[in-house]
Length: 183
Image (cartoon, rainbow, N blue to C red; front, side, top):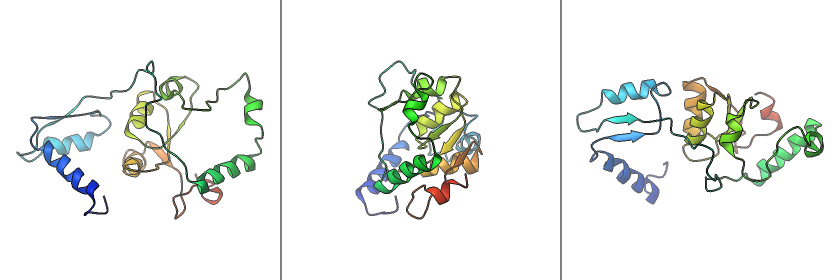
């Protein structure tokens, strides 16, 4: 939203103004997660409609998840990940865990993974649904925001709630060897 003359900025302003016409707004969140925000909203101006937390609403894990959003890594970030795996000394990971672990070569069933009792942590891109899902299942998070509102969500998770740690990025937004050692 840095470019105030962009079509996206105009669209977002129009969309936000439409909220003022509503009798109420339901949001996928819950009081315990965003206590301060909901307290502030209760003391709203008279022209702002009430906001109702109706969550957390998450998928059950039974439906297909392949229609969920996705993301890509830059070539530089992909190379850093490959280098990190190589430097870890854990060669032939798939061969080593055969019969003991679970690796998904395509889209992973996130709800099934997060709800499994052996899941000890979750590297999240900080999309709101992923945050809610991880919170519902009590899985600690490592915040790695990639785009959109994810950076704002990461600040909320790490600085506000103190409910996650955040990866360190260089000036290009890449997580690499010199940065990741400081987790």
